[in-house]
Length: 413
Image 1 (cartoon, helix red, strand yellow):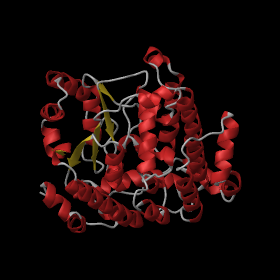
Image 2 (cartoon, helix red, strand yellow):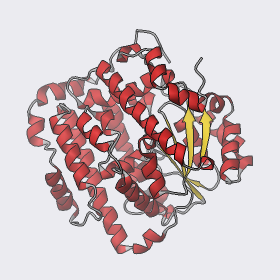
Image 3 (cartoon, rainbow, N blue to C red):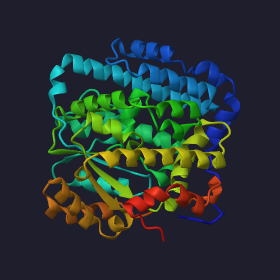
Image 4 (cartoon, rainbow, N blue to C red):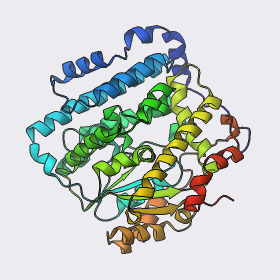
């Protein structure tokens, strides 16, 4: 945690600033965010009509309305969000068509998947990459999550055109948001987060990371909103593993904290690894990740308002996750503390494999050393952030998460 007050606002590239200044009202006229028009455009582009399960339509309508009425989107923000929504809808059409043509995909077993969750910046990404490299593991790569249809085939994995498409996608994202490379670099062929598929259902907790949409977030917090999204995610996992099976799936996203009940409803035999760290070292870093996206998408980002929103919504996420855990079998969960992971990553990977009954413990040392050698700390630069910049302080953060830190024995030096 960088407590210095030298942290400043994330700066946009000049080209993005000019587009946002010159775009003005043009973006609202050209890049319309209307659910019915977006669905019609997706159908026209694909020649397909059936979206399959239509539970996504109400969330889509609510999210588009929130972007229009609440978010105050910039020209570039409106363009980027419209393109992302259209991509999600096109993928839903293709996935529904795959399932219609190959009903056997729904018979692919998804047994005891391993989910990693926890606050951002608690070691989830490090742990995910290490477990994904272990023998027998299958972790969806970014290109598979962005464009899961048609089902990936191991015979053409190295030459699949979606890999190059994803490289272009990541290059564009990082040109628009240079800070992203330091905070959370995107790599086409690396394992990535479940949120890229969950967003296809438009029940999307990550929407708050792109824009100020409090009305939508309040609706999304309602009971059982996320079960259909996880059912769709299960369909996608079956599609991804239809031709590319593995002994076990490894999956990850901090967003699962919001909806652990829905996750366990759809994946009742899931094994859950939860990472932990002093929230004072987490909150400002998480805010900076949101700010990196918001400065592109909205016209007048307010870091102090963002800090309060992050504290409120992620506080609620942790409260909800703790309530679910209090009722679930304790043996279904394993807790990993950040300090222990950083001090002995090999030992923690071995511990997880013993707990999950996965075997392959002897491979852990080689996997860990290989990954660390390829990905030294600060490989993409130093990520600077401070609580004060977001209008917060350590005492306030510690008090908000006191129940969490005391329950899980989180170290608070």
